[in-house]
Image (tube, rainbow, N blue to C red; front, side, top):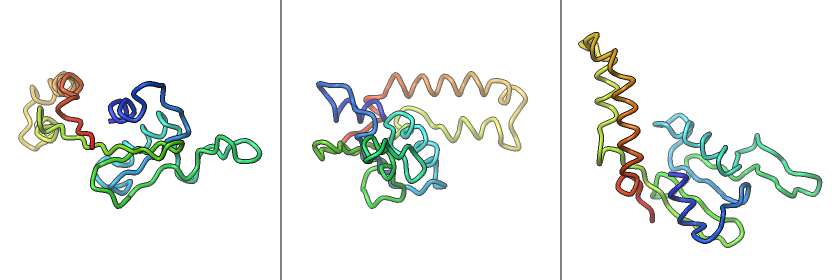
Length: 141
């Protein structure tokens, strides 16, 4: 999501860490929004109120750039602070894989020892499929 969103926002240049606002539709404890927010924070530098406060005078401040529970249509919205340009990003892995069925096959009460043992390989195959089909599972608006 970050890669595709940032490529859309910065088609001709490298993204500028700390100059991107990140808004997630879900709250941190909904779905995987907290995890996604942490990853996006590492990539973009955006944080809520806990990040780097900048050097004296506020330059390079990274606080108040990461928002959860945003009133947006997309799963995620990235906004450039210098131009105000933004891009919405949706993640739809179910287009190519069913992550929940892969997980449940390993933890369900009727999971066989073979299901449990093969889970790591099947999970990695799922991740590979998602990356190979990024243009299908990542929607930009």
